[in-house]
Image (tube, rainbow, N blue to C red; front, side, top):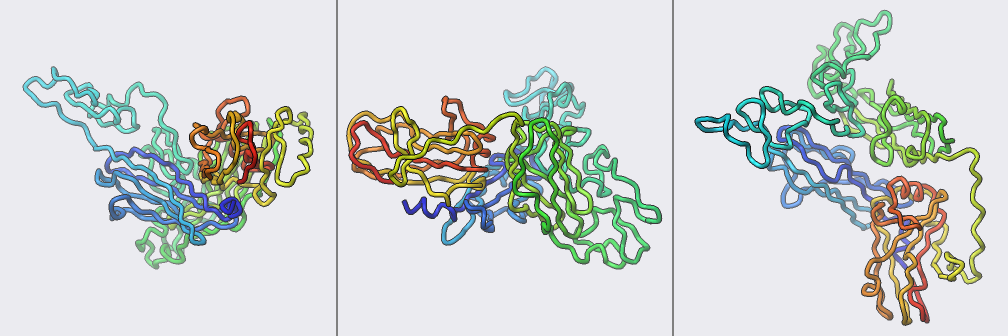
Length: 471
């Protein structure tokens, strides 16, 4: 159909995270990225809020929406939108702002009063909301809400875990400010070179007579007497993206490198399938002089997928293109034999030889690296003539990297009726796909298939006594 012919220029849009619960007074941020399905164009995006304007304390930069700080009125749905060739796509993120602070128990004998059903009692006369317990910050004045807590939430991919379990931006490391609150973001920052008058955590003013904390560099205020800390400030530009594809043996060590230029010097962060990479010491990230290196030891199948280089500074951020697609395999495993040749009729491929079920086979331009299709939609139209019982075979089959994933249409007896064209829409998330044995697909499975798609099949045979079909 026409929609399939244009799939290469269809825009796919992704938001991370899609849901956030943030305490009143804290910062909230959402990342949005749009790409065409063929990975050739990255359209700009813009944010709006459902039901009203963006908050006055919200700002947009390279697809990131930051609200600093949030208040209760900022709760709601935020829409990221991209436009390309007249096509508009959008995705939604939901923000829930939690009210702040402990509530004093009232009454003549406050210690005898119970807290509300949504509250937890402190060791004194206070109650705090349940969501404040074990959130990394003491709300009870006796700090009892932070005792005997399980492991903290995972930091965002571009955040650093402090010793006190708080999460701070990685670009704040070694900037001369105690962002963690325990000083752990300002340790192991290295030493100044011989003859340098400023510390590694400081910016040297151009007159050579003054040093200011690196966090003051390009903060919008002249801190150097000569104003040099606010000269030439610009967001990052990636000059050396990582290699586009890497094959690694299981258990081996691999390294990815990315370089960007900016003022101030950018921090290079890495993402895997838009989430975090593995934790140290198996995965180690370094960023020095605008050069970021990710080293992954003892490579495992869970390390497969799309690695994104993210360059960040106070002026903005940029994502390198293309992503690096990493595949992990066993050295002694032989590739499977080639599939049997398709029937002679063009456009068809026999998928199940025993039943001779027929499938439309999409042409080569729809295959290859289609990682950017993740989070998007597949749309096509089915029209057939015939009667009889519906086939239980999957509607769509994706093949890539020796993995096969299938999509089955639910309630197809009602959705597919002879002589009536039916539009099928499939959102490209792992929840809509499964393995041949019926096991649910993982995000890693889907990303691996999309990374090297060598088969895209659409069912052509729908009922036992079928006369004709089109798609």
